[in-house]
Length: 189
Image 1 (spheres, one colour):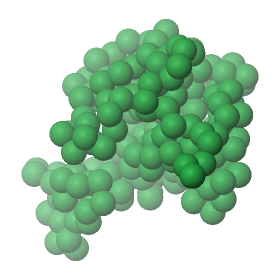
Image 2 (cartoon, one colour):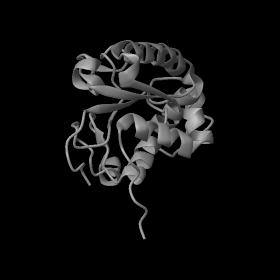
Image 3 (cartoon, helix red, strand yellow):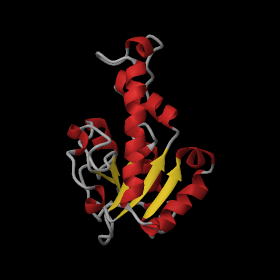
């Protein structure tokens, strides 16, 4: 459920396709506290994450793909200063090529776990080819990370690399929990 008392508003910031959904599942399972989202989510994600739509200290972290509004489209972020909204941030970083492939697959398949067929990489989502998607996305990936990194002093920002989280989930989750000042939830008997 929600936290027993409100804490700082912490961003779980990532570029689309960087593993935010998986990280949210891990955080909720480890802490027993819901994660929120600053974005409009699909009905499937709203059902999966009961904290969707909550962007406050009553959730362990708030999913966002927004930095200062320049990195992503206005309909996702609606501008605004990143640091002004979140007191601290966990930045989940994935290799840009892998993140862009994952996001392309998600958009083309309309699923967080789907895959675009080989033909979609030449045809792309409506009106967009993979080459154009990747070129635009690489620029947005760079700006997004620059903006988040520039928004926080070292003590208020934890950088987590997706590949390390994949290889050593328990150790990386422990780092995140320590940064958040959270203890793991007791095991279910």
